[in-house]
Length: 358
Image (cartoon, rainbow, N blue to C red; front, side, top):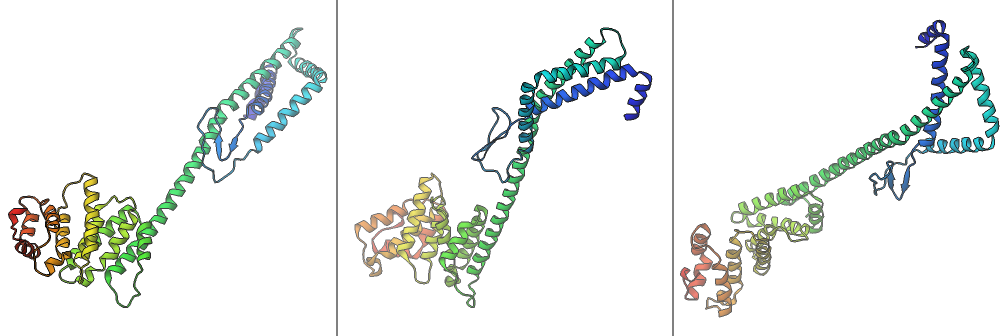
């Protein structure tokens, strides 16, 4: 490009002079306009706004904006304005001298000085306006895009860190649950508080996996190995502890089943857990899980001292037990289980009742 300019000067010296002087004048005006138009950062309590009227972010950024260019612009603008006001007359004299020098370089007619003045003023003002508008309109968007990009990078990094922490918490929770279900007698017992904390920190997906594992062990071992089945009870308690809003009725239902099927059954707490499960299920308008009522009826029967003494239950107990049994469908698998259950059959016989009564 430099060789092209040199060649142009040698062939068309006047034209090349006009191009170079106008370009330099416009560049100087653009630089001044750029200094006047540089946007200002607004940073207050973590709020960053680069575009007037644009969105602001109320979250604190992990870095501080570099305002060196803004400060330099502010200083230079103040200097230019101050010097321009104080030295206005000398500046006009220097401008006159510069215009005369340009006119001499053009080697033209008598109107050449006027043309030189007009050319300098035109390109100086044009450059100033272009530089000001460009820095005022384009720079804020560029700064905002960079700022948004950095925020996205920071947010992505935070999400990755959160996922890593959650994965570690899930791994810890699943490891503790597996130790609990293994029933290793050589290992120290796992405290209920440890299980509660591990399950609480686990993700929803991990808690679902924990529930399914505990449910599977409870179902498989409830008859063949009740002692191992009892290992699931602390897990269901931990799941209940993590569900502070009482959203999942199955946690309480499985706990009630496990307490009922213990080697030494806890009828009272099992009935309480099943009652909570029924309340959550009904409150969420869900259908099914009628085994809750059946097992609660079993708990009520076994809690009745008259049943232990093989005598007729009180009217209140009869009404309570029958209320649960009447929730069962008229036919189906659950109905068959209830009609053939030894506890239910013995209770009906002691109270001179039949399956037709429910």
